[in-house]
Length: 618
Image (cartoon, rainbow, N blue to C red; front, side, top):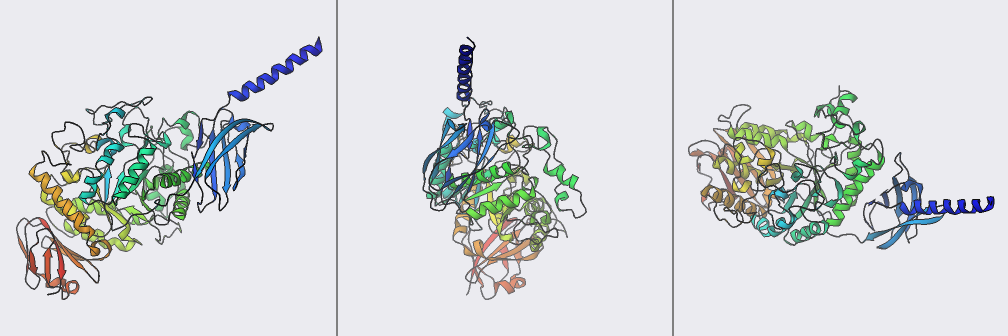
């Protein structure tokens, strides 16, 4: 009898073990796929599933070697290191998960061939068009609301989702190309399954999936391909500093130290100076670095090596998958500095030509220059970041144009003095310059809805040194007097929704001022493509005088003279002051009007405007 009971007990235990094993499943494997031929042969997989850490992984595929297996304090995660030998062929293979030598789970993994279009880059020859996808064009109303998403579409709510999508962006690629833009930067398009204000995209809830209300991964990739066929690159907006509070791993954190401050909200100090201050404290640096922006954006602890690798690989995955030309990186100084150095090194190791522009929002050019590659720093910090947004120049431009007087520190002198600080930058031509973006007032609002000042601002952005960026709809004088609410700043592009009475794509219903602004912007953008001095030339400028600011873009083969005139009335500009640049190129053609000028005579300027002249010898 005792033997029979032992027998049944043994059977019951075996069935219990089988049942327990069969109950286990794999919920996530990330990266979801990979590529052969990467310069760095390492690949670390994050595997998530109930009690997955109890199992031992095994891999059998030619050229793929299993390395370290890392377990954390959460038994539902395994981190598997693989090495891909040179010559490893694309293909599929199984990752087996074993208990006591017996395979209880399998996951099919795929290796792809490299994408030759990935990492093409951008530079001063380009002009970037920034789009908030939810507010541009609603091509597929059927995806305005998607199953399982917390927030539904409500176009009447400035902070709600309005229905713009990736199909809408793709449908207007011809408009974007005809305007003269050569790069598209989309605000984040990853899944943002947040209960409110999810339209802006900066609180990702899945790092490997496009938000279903915008489209899907394949549509994003096809958008990149279609844009490239029109000579337009695609720039991805990525967030390394934080995720969304509804991210799937917030319900089951990979490790206790995955999120800063133990996963509890502590606001960041926003004190960027603390990072550069030679007299500062580590506690002040931590207050900036480890603090959260808002409670719905948990701050990622990139000092955790597993998370650091995860973020690096996720970046590489999207560049390769979608054939990206570049990246825009959100809130650059708020991430861990050591991580940022390694992140840029790894990314540029794989894609040496890739454009990467970091957002370091500060009015002080020294605070921006610190982050650019090649800058000599007293603290010895090494950065590989090639591009940054020129926030100091944006501030100088908007303030300088609206100020009535050009004093020693005001008016057009602001612009001149800011550019004079270019000695701080290793590569000032690689700064991205702009008059507005998604986080600030529209340029037309900043300038008091003054069309003349708008043309001066856009004309300056498109002709000074650097890489220009324009915000969608600003070419149509989109404005928002009386409010700086972000949801209003990011209003819908007119004509992007069915039954819109005004259509910026076709011109229907545009005011005379809107037509003038759009035509001005289009003409400058397309002329710029054929102007090597604007794209590659030196910048020489002269201190403002009598309400005018004169600067030149010039190469040995071409000279362009640009004059900003803030005076309300016409002026006669004596050009002898600029003879060191003009030289013998005494004939000039206004590229906007076609009018000819003899620079031996005084140059007639209309009041409040920009003049762009191409010079040549008599």
